[in-house]
Image (cartoon, rainbow, N blue to C red; front, side):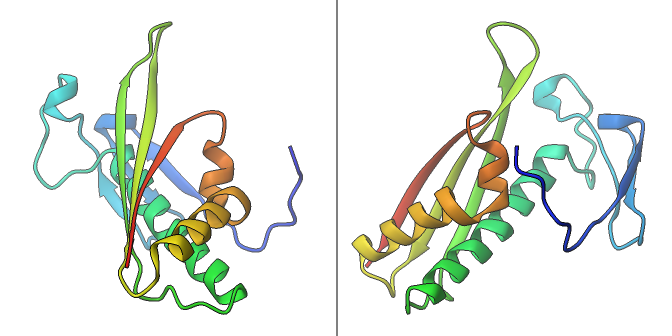
Length: 145
């Protein structure tokens, strides 16, 4: 694994795990967690799961990586809409695993251009994509002009 020189660091603390409370050290985010009914929990309204946060983070991060990649190639992907769907399920061996389906849409870019930008952003730029590679199944559905 490559060592990095940190540019930005954030810390978060959780008490109670999936049924507890978490907050960032700067109090920008503070939230209560609840197990979804589908996983045998109460699915309490107004609460989140780690999957909510992963989906939000990956969607935003990938959108930024896509815009960066496009800019480097003289293209404009500022109209791209990135939706990240995160699923959790049981592994055959034991425990749980995640899978990701990323939907990227930008009808201002030709399909071939958007396909190439998404591929490059995923393979070379996005830190979430680097973190999930060979660990989490990530599939893409890309819709351009």
